[in-house]
Image (spheres, rainbow, N blue to C red):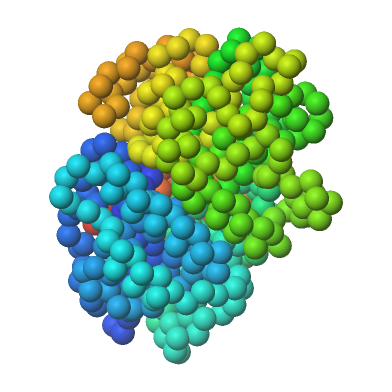
Length: 462
Ligand SMILES: [Zn+2]
């Protein structure tokens, strides 16, 4: 018998975790944290399986909602092997250490998700692989990672277990990624079942060129008014896309020298990883790097690693880079995590900037229900941060054109590129109304059964 249990990202976007079982093996695909005020509590509950019995963990990519509970899994007895791509292993190490640091700084309760022993042990359990390298465990189990074009190292994973084939899409990038290579390995193949993310299963992203032009106008307008620009963003990928866009505006002389602060204790290490794995970037970006025009590392940018430096930057508009004389005021662009404003340095920048009308907050990623970012974006008049209330007077904008997720058409394209229609599709990683819409879209196009699992749902695949 082969069965799958949906333990997270089922009826919501975060907490990805699927348990696949045969008579011989227990395999987890992803082990992520739940993000959002109400569901955050789920991170502290016990696993719905015995971590000691899990043989393998297959990790699609290094976003926290896919990998953030791995240290807890290890702490509770997991000693199996973790398979991921090489960039994912490197990114995991940065992301998880950063999360542990933030937890230490912000967590006022005694409960912790992270401790250094479990983190080190988890890193030692990784076996990193290349895209399209077939991992053969035995006659009953093999798997393969395919480029998902979402963030560096991200993968869809095909698993063959006891004669059943299942494709886990992982998070899927857009079909026209801005800085990554075009997810060339992700299409094709025949599978009995597909577990597909559907974050944007009911929407078409705005056109990226329209978004770039609006972003440019907002930045110029805000700078002219002496406002600051805050961009809450995950450290991985989308931030680099924004830097690429801002850099091209500067190179085209559409923007002058505004100081740009790329926040994050590990920010320079992220940059180094982009360089280490630059062969996974688009040809255009690779050529720029070869010409010495680094798209993520240019004159006006400061990678802010130290907390003290960050506090100084959030306290005033001053940076080490002098304001351009073409502008009347000294302003700044700050890119800081977390993208959904659930924690991290963006909070201190929000506290300093959100009450003034001249400032602007630009959201470029998905905002899960129950997160501070979503509250602001939905038009909250005031917000609470660290127990204090702040009036929202800064303007805020939300763009979908820079998303590192595919939109509805991209997701359908992903399915249509398969060599045959699977006998079952599971829509995960989205809010229920969105996956219901996406289900309707799939059913219109493909003759197959589509399920929207809830947390805890178990399906017999064979
Ligand atoms: Zn992701």
